[in-house]
Image (tube, rainbow, N blue to C red):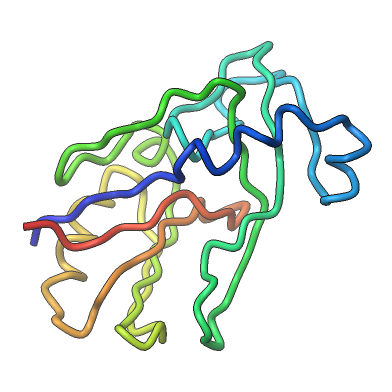
Length: 156
């Protein structure tokens, strides 16, 4: 089954870079300079940020639906991040290079399937999950830190 991974949309977060450190702190966010690569995966560009780049670390509600699975977690966004435009069935290196937790939800936003796989197995695991018509969409998380990476949806 074909799928499309959807990164976060950069225009939602550009305003954060204009805030002072105190204003960010009031929103439980932090401006950081990247010190190691890999390790700071940008959810807009779907790439690891480069050493020396500025990122904002903030809490993002990735599952905002009215469900017991409502959830949020910390994510990174790079300053001046180039918006990722992924092709159908494309899994970017930032996902392929990590152990991944996959969570799949039905139309009522209830989890109906989940798996933990090595990044190179993500495409097959997503495709197999979408073979089940009950699965409406999925979330991709970095397994060890648990942070949200992107959503994934059926593609025709």
